[in-house]
Image (cartoon, rainbow, N blue to C red; front, top):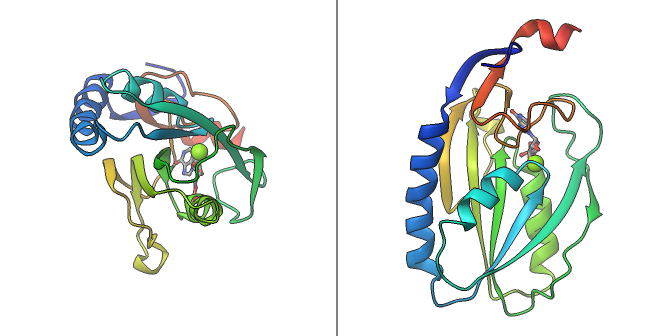
Length: 182
Ligand code: IMP
Ligand code: MG
């Protein structure tokens, strides 16, 4: 285990098993639709590439890169598009693949942006959803495919970063407090 990790929350095997189940559901829903699968960079890249290799039907992929201003562990709510889609989404069935929903502000902004371009449908697949301690802070967004619901803690690994580090860990884990204070 990485020396900065306090606890493994979701193991490599648990990730694999759950993603297989999600892939099964997504196959039932999309196998004749040639969907456009959108990866939200950078966090969702590990999840998305594992997921699409379990989908044995025609699909296309594209990437969108957004950033909430600033580094650190709190979402700012101000979203900036760094890289837009290359694909025209009008009349397409879209599946947005995200790593984690925290406040939901990032995805909320993205969905409003995509809706203006008139796709046929938009659904969301998020590997993780954070259950907020304060119910008023819980996101109102309807997520169609959810990997795991986790408690309100900052996690890294399997694509998720802290200051751009730890994305390559094969599991989802919690950092030691000493890492933040450095
Ligand atoms: P939201 O806008 O608050 O839902 O936050 C969305 C983005 O913040 C995610 O796509 C992640 O990139 C990042 N984020 C939120 N929580 C975490 C976390 O626990 N670890 C790493 N990144 C996170
Ligand atoms: Mg992200």
